[in-house]
Length: 178
Ligand SMILES: [Zn+2]
Image 1 (cartoon, rainbow, N blue to C red):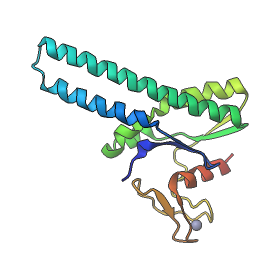
Image 2 (tube, protein in one colour):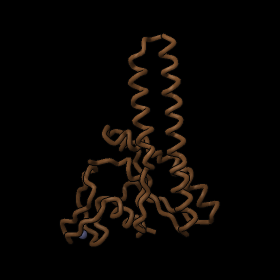
Image 3 (cartoon, rainbow, N blue to C red):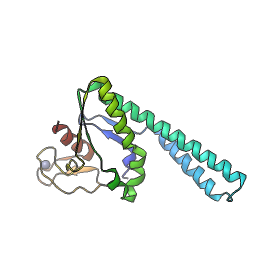
């Protein structure tokens, strides 16, 4: 199954950061609480209490996500002299309903904010490449460019025949621009 949320970041070094396991439990709990809220009578005290529970759970998940992002951005800025990231076309991806939730959960803007100040702090160079660079469509081995549907998880090059994880392929392309 295609699940963008499980992989938060893939580095050109092959290091992959995943969402922590308990994140899914908390997300499932949020769904349950939202369902309970929708069943409560409008204006009732029970509805108010249910809404408070939903708000608290939202907050809990946001904190979890921030901790994970901090873990990733610290690792990147502390261990690499040069960090290259792609300026994601978040608005464009949000228009794709399937991806909207995943992108929102990944918190790209928060990631960007953290990586910027940490690179300054640890003296690493941060390079942001254009969102229009076809990092996903380009073969990192032979340079061939082909269409890549977003739900496809491997890049199968029709030119040189290599089959590679699509996130790793994209990050290799991005790292070469440095
Ligand atoms: Zn190729």
